Length: 262
Length: 262
Image (cartoon, rainbow over the protein chains, first blue to last red):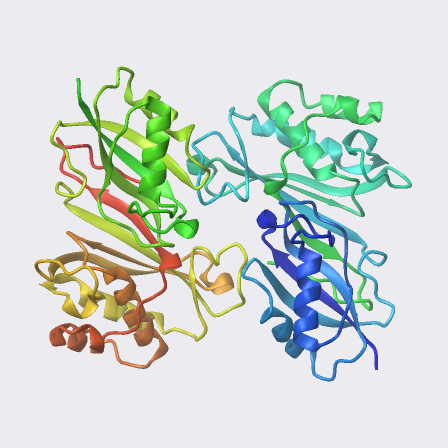
């Protein structure tokens, strides 16, 4: 009997060419599919809630998996797959899902986290997970700018070319600048953005724009101006991939339990 | 004019064959010497306070460096070397030192940190920096056992073969089991040991022994017994390298300022 599962997955994307299977390159999806085949003997497709780019990480990516046959329970499936995965990828949980559960179509929203290191020296233990910016940032100005990103509107100005969506209108539910506990000592700062869906490079473009406000290149109100111009060329630079984490993906109860990452 | 400097260095040892130069293998010392030569045009030897093994990290390794000629200041030297180093190694500070400063001979003591993850799943962001142990540990028993390690005594039972020292007597000044803030959630635990000097694999052997006490295989008092037998075969297993960090090296004021790492 065919069964459908929802997998919650964390990964360090540093050494992968992104989520999606590519010929002759290590990818998260390809590695998961190979591990599942080795563990279960079944050739499957693991469908992620969205692609992540090369170097981007996940704390709680969600993927749907349809298995032609699996007689044991979800925990056994999770352990079997994990036993074949490298240290850089882990299946954190497996939930039984409705037959027609689809990780992309059914996603109600997502939350991303972008990690920064403000000033200070290169940190050998953080360079895979943070963007180091060299100048002081005005956190209050960044917080004001972040508040302007929230809302149901056209985010064309934060959409990179390369994967055009049908519409550029999204509902950004939250956009926070988070001063981490060790900010005074290590300059660790994070930006979290939650929306019903995201355009290509949207979080990295929002981050680059908020950082320019932080540097004092523009006032916080510039974000409103950038948004109203609906053109990518007016926004800040695209922040590099290594600071970005897909943190959570939300689903309605009934498809699969809303899944929380750490 | 020849000048002597004390370098404080942090590194992620994952992809290195340890501190010491080896033919045809990437090492921390070799990488530092190459970067210094590229930055200054001078062929130098960087002498570390001690070797670290393959996979072992440092937050505050100290090395002495004698330069035939360097006309700029310490900050310029630090920047020049850092500009040639990979992301996995950073020179955190450079101090001018007395002509006869020697990072090994003048070290008054060192502090190591060993990081554990107790139970829980594989963590893609921590596997390079922690030893994951599968069973519950009794932290109170580990703390009692750690207290027994402190003192001026013969530590033969915690000395691996391979790099015999003249004497196995050391003065362990501190040995702490540290419950990290996120212990409840992620099982993060650390052991820190400070001594005037260390025998080969000493911290990894102490850690393996304290963990066996934590598992309940032996009572805390067993550590006293192990020490009194003065033979490595009685102690616990050697903990793996990736959890170990050389945290600080201490010097008398006058040679080089006592150097504190983050």
